[in-house]
Length: 254
Image 1 (cartoon, rainbow, N blue to C red):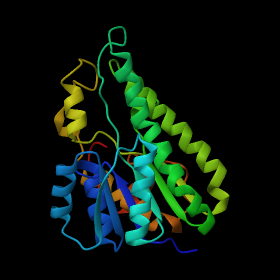
Image 2 (cartoon, one colour; image 1 turned 120 degrees about the vertical axis):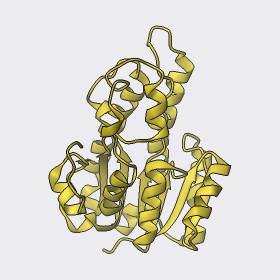
Image 3 (cartoon, one colour; image 1 turned 135 degrees about the vertical axis):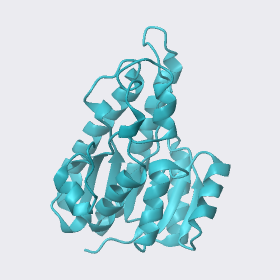
Image 4 (cartoon, rainbow, N blue to C red; image 1 turned 30 degrees about the vertical axis):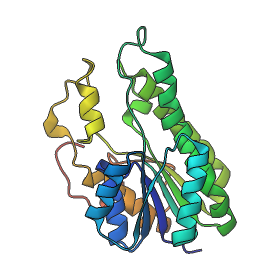
């Protein structure tokens, strides 16, 4: 069954989320862009400058806020065919022995709870329609420990397993569920984390960072065209086959 071209992209006021929304709009989708910061979200909507964009402030860690978001999008655009769970935080960064435990748990609430809240809020209708796609932003940090990033790495490992479990439940019901690893991307979140703790990531050369548009091209392709291909739940920009499908120009380092 053909997917309904209405998408929600969280964390969409800048970076990967913004670029993904822009590319989906270009592909003919109606897109709800979501973030907590109202001013940044409004500015993003102005830059996108499309009658098919809807800016909805939402705290994805709060289920009431998420349910209100989904109801607003359905009323404005109709049934939701795609969800890109891009929203996330990396702070607190620091030695686990001295890190604030409330902040550590708050990150899990956002990075893991937010993905769970958003996915559950849209999944029932997708299963009923036997059509839809959910893409969760993963990270190499899901499987590679990073000093000072215990909260973030733990959250991404949890999201990876959640994605695989959800895919096992609904893949035969017509709903696609994917993780996507975007690589090392030049975002405010990564740049801020690099400055806070001396580890292997902090010492990465800036020249290897990808512009946000490159992983966004993969995300938009997975949503818009991935249905025609037998894609695995776990996807990465480092996979040359995926890059070929998307049509990315090759570069020395991914």
